[in-house]
Image 1 (cartoon, helix red, strand yellow):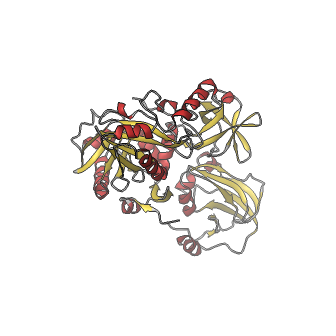
Image 2: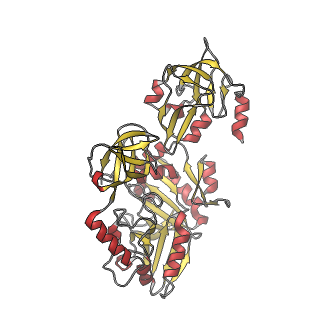
Length: 370
Length: 125
């Protein structure tokens, strides 16, 4: 394999003593100290993340909206300028290529943010699907570093560094501004279940912004956070992760996320026919449902482990980890509908040959108090 | 990090104390604890179990993974650290002290245990 890619903050991570990990071809911080402490900091104070591995794709032009409406399953024309939307890109057969956040930066300008591991596939697919439209698709992966400040203290920390109207910036909105003297797209998005911001900046400015945020957040308890706690944070918040809950073998309806598919939008879109059939199947009788599982014991379920009931395999764990907030192991799993109702008894997870009892619950495991 | 001089070490990253009345204490090294990340579950051999050098005798589960626990020596388990079962974070916070795992009456020791300096060199690579 070729050398992993380094973010603009690589030297900073190393000077902080981060444990690094290869993630989708990038050398990324896994944790700086204790991942549980980092998790708790985001839940109770604030955490600072380098997410520069995420893939930005900009689509511009008079038909940018039509191109994206055709390429993606969501309704792009209904996103107001300065707002963002969670959506997906699917194959012709309805299988999920990736889940995305689309920011409408201007009337004819959208930024699509894809998962690092899928960025090339998404870029290729959007480029191909947009070819018939008067729109330009630009690979902006190297144009941005992405820093995230997440947690209840994050608005206060950010406010001390910017004149931008953060109070007016709603969840899933983004506006251009200046943070710590650095031009940034300030977005109120995240993947932690907490209030927070994602800051898209030029890679050359990343270090200055990181240091400014670190300094500004010191008294509020902000700590640098790695991908390990990002995974447990999103898991508690019941947020799907591509490659785990979402794959090309599943449609958005299989994943319980059929709401992102907008059949009412004008014109055809890639996957429409297959997704209409998938929607009907899901409405009639979903074969498997995505549920939460909470352990009664302390052994941790992992992706790929079987969900069992009455000696039969009735599902599969897609993500699992010890939950710092609940103090117990938790998992997200696809479970046969007959065993998927919250409170269903007799459900367990096969953990290396032992059937450990689990409680079936509705997702998410954690919801912040607003 | 520094590995205590008075201990000896296995290449599977367990440490072994000098024997007192034939009983040695076993734990995992700080290097191993750091590599694992936050330990959340510890399964130890039971008192009376026979453990064999180089073979698995329990498991350590962290946020990201599960790892087998290997015994650095052969013998009979005479005590398991209930504190670490109740609070697995001791493995991270005090791997050479309160985070010890079990005590074993040593029947046989393999010849390839490392000194502190040798183990430090082994993990430096």
